[in-house]
Image (cartoon, rainbow, N blue to C red):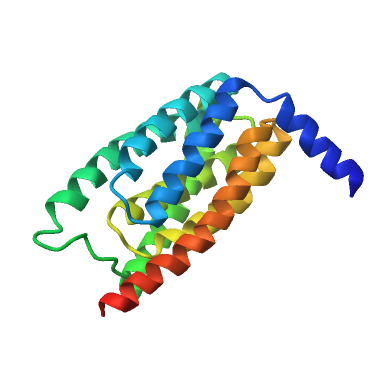
Length: 201
């Protein structure tokens, strides 16, 4: 146990400044999203910009490309949360139908396979199936999040579990730690949004 903790500390202390900035912005952005604050969007836009540069430099092509998608959806989500709330204090949290959940999972799964077999090899991804899974399911989770569907949180839980192991093996210590924090925040977000949804019922 002592050796594991020493390795973690060593990785954290030797991480790049960009990795550290990514950690700070990422945690702040997710915490604000859990609170359903509009500030989540400008902080999130800064976070995905930093993360895109980091992933590009460390040869995670799907993850780097994914940050462009995040940037666009965060910008749209900001507009959507403000415009479509009407006279209400905030846009309400909603849940997908059973059919909607099945469709979301099927589309994400098919996209994973297609990405791993085509784009992954073309972009010379270090781990094409892992890269494709995180990319496809993150896209699904991000779309559900900016739509304020509660199902985004369980998808983030799964994505974060896979990401922690992947980024640690790639020696991105701060990014691996960030996704470990994201995992805990996803669980907290799931609980918090469910309370908000039940309170509005």
